[in-house]
Image (cartoon, rainbow, N blue to C red; front, side, top):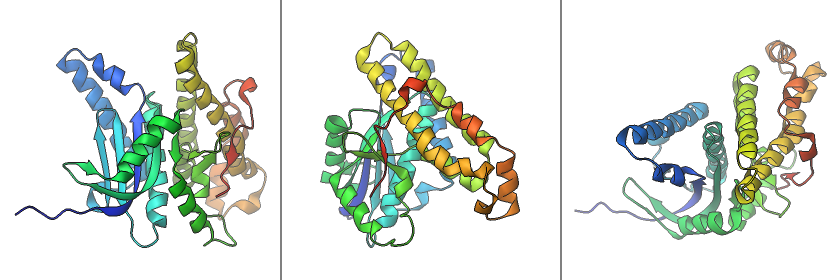
Length: 293
């Protein structure tokens, strides 16, 4: 007898790994194909290790990769706050780890009816996220649907005296669209493990990949614009997220919970490390704003 399957209200993320399709088309033999497959497998494993979780053990959370696409789907339980925040965190982490291997990501997050299992993906929420990625994301960013924005506004009403959990994972672009602040995955990592040297080393690799592509595609305006957007995002993140998060650490001892935090931070020159992540002073701008949801 066929096992019963049914749709659920879900949070769904769809992402396109830019440039992956062209890379796959150029594969000519098994050896090259296996090398790329292994590289993708390493990225996925590193992202999972970064998150410190086992997705497979939770039947309500599914992540599926196919060719140059990723689908994230979480069944909503109760009000959907934890599923929405998890989606932001997961997609940010995967997006960041792909960027370290010079694969940048564009996508969208939606909410609605969906189904996903080992065999197939089905539902209007998947279609909506795909169409948003295709038609509205434009730049290498993962944008939020109006439905997700409405959910986040509702969640914010829960927090009258503290900052909502989701706020640091989102930035508002100059076109009014909210997108996933994927570099915050590194801040989250550093705040948990206190390994600032490793965190800033990863951020430097992200910067270097963008600079490399800006040079490589200088004569291809369409592709170059994507890396120009990434350079602006990188700089905004450094000047408005990293500085807000860490500049005080070298100045204000009262902000530390314990002496261990102070010792870790006092040994690291945050200002110098952040300054070294900026890509060209002419790319300093106010096109983005911190999340106001």
